[in-house]
Image (cartoon, rainbow, N blue to C red):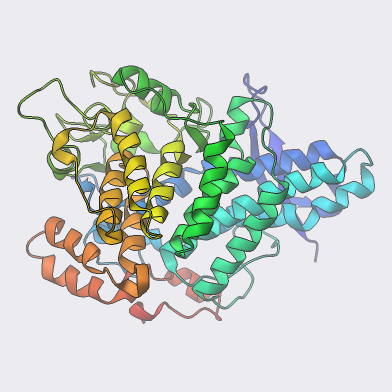
Amino acid sequence: MKKYILIVALLLTSSCGKWLDVKPQDGIIRDNYWQNKEQLKAAVIGCYSSLLNNGLVSELFVWGELRADMVSSTLNTAVDEVNIMQANILATNSYTSWSYVYSTINYCNTVIDYAAKVMETDKTLTQAALDGYLAEAHGLRALMYFYLLRTFGEVPLQLKATDSDNSLDQLEKSTQDQVYAQIVADLTFAETHALETYGSTAQDKGRLTKYGIYALEADVYLWNEKYDDCIAVCDKVINSGRYGLMDGSVQSQWFNNVFYIGNSAESIFEFQFDQQQLNPFYSMFIVATNRFIGSSRVMDEVYGIDLTDATKKDIRGDGGSIRATDQMIWKFAGATGGTTSVARTAADSWAHWFVYRYSDILLLKAEALAWVERGQEALDLVTTIRTRAGAIDGTSESPDPGSAIDVSNYILNERTREFAFEGKRWYDILRHAKRNNYAHLEIMLDMVAMTAPGSMQQSIINKYKDVRSHYLPINQYELQADKKLVQNPYYQ
């Protein structure tokens, strides 16, 4: 049986000079492809192109936001989406499918498995260049498995390329510890060999540089309570001098640079949607078609309103992350910030998906510092974030620097303001709740108590008291396709 691999075909468009103008496809025999370094590079870029699949990005938003407290439904919200919001999740729910993520993993596996063979036919491909391409594939694979780890818990570790990017071998689930170990192994290789720059801003923000790997490592280490390791890699990003917080003194300029255009000075890694490859956010967030809006609590409880001075406002609130008049998720829907008067049209729905920004590094480090008895340093970093944003006094807290949990909770609240709707809220809640063997499950239960519909509140609380419910079920189709898979315990 002939074996097949991912290829990439250059798009014949007027913008073919752009670095990401490639699309992954199945169906070319291995022996007839990848004869030179240019084709290898195209295959690596194809891995990034797969991230622009609208189904993948929709899932990343749903997985990271819908079980938390920042997003509300509309009359357009799909039944599967409402069920996730109400913690009524079955294996038939379309959002329990992991096929988009494993598709990208398979593209990465193909590069990892076959890239070295190019050196046999193209003697100009150096070992350093090969290792750089492999670092990108390992880094992207680690990112995809990190999403799976936080969403499903135990998942199959598919580490070899398959014949089709939509298929998996018959594999049993690996434990959370095994998945975590593989993520760290991939990142260890990537950290060693990744490039510091690819020569242009768009590529440095749209491909995984060494600093993008450090950012992912920081997130991974914090998830597993490796605080010193987290701090160390955060410092590598901070001390590089390559990133900084964009000035927030003029909200409209800040919004335009960070969110409307993207790839700003504080950007570390973003999915590079553009006019040729639009995102799914228009139908998700724009009024009249929107399936999601910001929760009614966002302005009052998250960003706050200064009742004594209307000129004081958190730039991340009205006109930054949300439009207060109709709760539109402005971070992805807005064409202008500050005045909140102009929304994107369907034709310019190309806002990037923000994976890591410099503010994330500061707050990841702050959280780690809180748990190694360096609370004042953590609070100083929070102050840096709040000062840039013009956060109002009403959202300021004064935790005891010696109380790790109090400082950590303050950081959690600040992360809510800083990363609203960026697909991080549920993972942040889960990370804080599960810390020290679920010593702080009340963080999750309190969230439910404050935001769940009254008629469902107790039911959802009872579900979340069983920590096995914090991960999604394996989709019914996957169980039928892979007889070695066993449903996650809560859903058996």
